[in-house]
Length: 311
Image 1 (tube, one colour):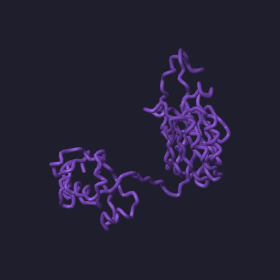
Image 2 (cartoon, one colour):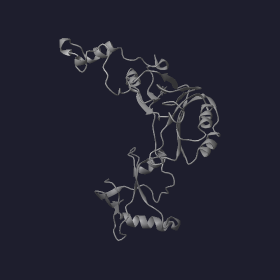
Image 3 (tube, helix red, strand yellow):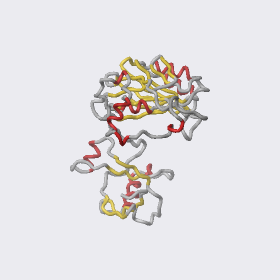
Image 4 (cartoon, helix red, strand yellow):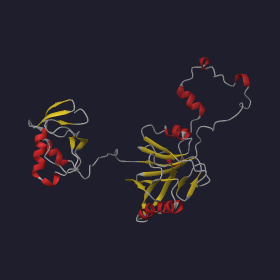
């Protein structure tokens, strides 16, 4: 599984990057592309040709960067991935003007049914309504652990349908409205077909729950891990029973190249690990940091270090 979000200033530079992708017939590609991108047809064509199955949509611009072109992709192995297409309707469009339901007297139109006369339960009510079945690709797939889907603005029907797989994690994205871009209310892609409504997505049969790590690139360690021996709120008064600011100055003196005026300094908070000690944790896990905090500027005459959060 490979996840990427590409942010580009122009559609041409994004397309140049996508041309470097090598097609793989054993993969399934899930993607979203900014609806306002130029060369949109060429970008979609390149994405479609990079995997055996391609599922995607046109999405809204990134908040705060309306001019940027965004392309988010997720690549899954076909062995663990089940593509699906849904035509289950959601909520009906809002009616404007005077109307009344056919065959319903106007005076009774807003009255609720009387449930007090029957011991009807919520489960019975769902059964009597004949809740929507799962999309064809997901039926008899009780081993699915994660569901990802791209939908129009009415995903309620699909959401009720996916409740038939209660143990699966579910994540959906509403596609952007595209009537003035593609001539369709929404633009969804499923292999070589384009849809204006409904939803497309993938079900994942992962052998284990996915994990995530955070790496802080570009940071240079100034010292070995140390134990906070004395603190008060967000003030660190002691590291290894010594003055924190004095140890920082000592570490900088050890390598003058680190003492640049524009440098910023951070405090790394290690995750708890085995009883072997912090040094063992540091080498056993390539990403042992639970949190990286920017040190707040203060007077050098102080012997304490101030962090933004309480330790």
